[in-house]
Image 1 (cartoon, rainbow, N blue to C red):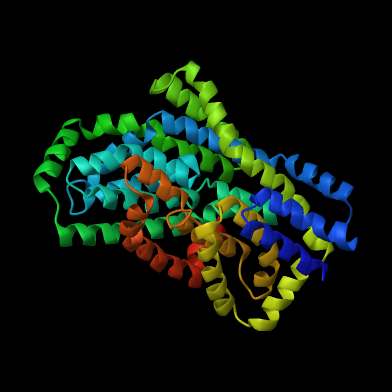
Image 2 (tube, helix red, strand yellow):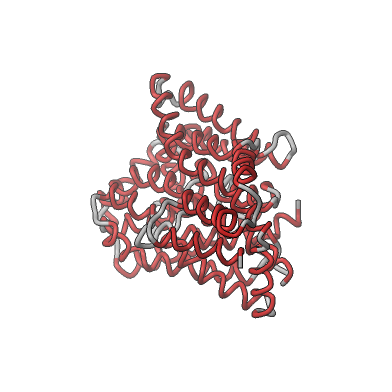
Length: 431
């Protein structure tokens, strides 16, 4: 009964639009105050402070800050020019270059909205100038921006690791092939659309001729430092040079050095606003992370996780069935719930049950993050939709309608990722 009370109070609070952090507090406190179960209020507060006082959690604000600095440093344009040099003249080549830029920029920012903002601010006007429809261009960037939370280093993977204890490095490896697969499916649809609808080849060829005129050597040197960032961060983790938290710190200093002294695209006076922006982004999430530990402890004391585990094991007898149901639930939750809180709440509750059905914890983490990343581009609260809508000066719902085919392509890739664990665990098993 105490376990049921936790979920009822929590879900009712969310349903009446209470902020997620406060909802977790109410759900955690309900069995303590009403039934004298689940510990004490003092324990609840101690668990909240211990949740905030964690070294691994520092990776989240540091990756956010590094992404902000690289975004403001104009890195996305340099990456786009590099990829457009190779594929720009092909049918659908310009949209494919945009998707490749999102794919690679995700390895710098670790965030979907940050990827959408950085790539969209440059690529949407550029695509419109080449004759592509504004809403279609915004829809493309909104969906492709979701790759920012799948390609490592990914902030949601760090949160999943914090919530479950699964290795952050393994999760980063697990996201590589799924991110590439989703990118390929998005590019396949973009090429199909451009062949079917046609492109303004005169304008495109003119722009690509100007780009080719710069020479591959100049473009490579211009984008080299941006391309090197994920190599340093991920290479350092997998060679054992530094931990994921230390890698996040390295990413901040690397972003500062590249943007201040190499590209000279920002100045020292810009750093305070960047810090403020990062703190604002992380502030609400930090509050949720702190009380997530307390919430999880209460769930454990009231045996709520055991209740969920028993329900799943008694009603589902194969990983195929349970994953099918959970994917639908995750997709719906992704439409109305932010990625971070959803992972913190769902992962520790569901992982023990699906593991007993033979699901690898890395594979489950990849599925959860991929499902929630689709939610970034789906109404009513898809954050990437609002970012792309603002950048394109179009209503978010209008952008959402043009994003539907890209979402379908994403879902096809998600089905392969869900039912073929190889995509998630292949690199983990190799290294």
